[in-house]
Image (cartoon, rainbow, N blue to C red; front, side):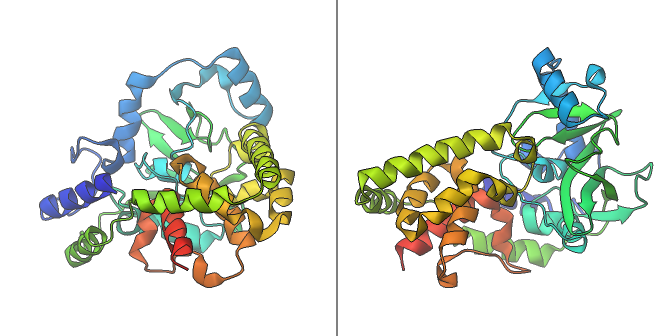
Length: 331
């Protein structure tokens, strides 16, 4: 949140000169608020060749990928995903909207909703001027976003590596195909909106207090050891499966993780495990447990689901987890 506030203050301080998102602008010293193309260029310092094991795995799951001509530009990370990275963001995870129109709107409102360096507008599918491509299996199953990097395209593959690739080489069963392309919008910044956004977030610090964290731990400690052991075993197996199963390993949607059998088994344990879910959510990297909580929690008042226009959506899944903990504690 502190980083987010600094970014917003930065935007406000320079917003009169930054009336458009342009590839050649040098607008910040942090990755999370510069253009995705600049992040991609900077990735050159992190480049390495893939190992043979990585090549074999990628070739198996992406048959059209020329693995002899790819470069690894970032290591595996669950902090951010392809949608965030294609918008120039590396400090939070942004689930893709499944429906085509909603997916397009995510990019059209990228600056407003997610603190991206700019909003985007559609261009011809796979147009030569595109800077971002949106992928999907169909108009109701959008899956992925890739970004143009110098002379190559680049993708963060779910929790897995970030790699360069030929523009259409990820086509297949995992991401489907390119269904929409975007260019950076030249629309002028909405200054009143930015001012209101900064004011609201400045007044709403989502950092959990030590007392709140301890309250979660106290509630979790009251769960019977046998139930806790069963839950922890399932969670660890689920976490491992997410990172190895091709159906989830490359997915940018935490909802995709719900197809795995361990999820179903934890869900069947019922509301008794909610304190254990909350205990796990105290660790930022476990935000992917939110769909499990949402599936078990029947009281809609104790869930955090952002509506259209809610500025808190820009916080990403990590902060939604903190909000969920807080609202659950205050029930």
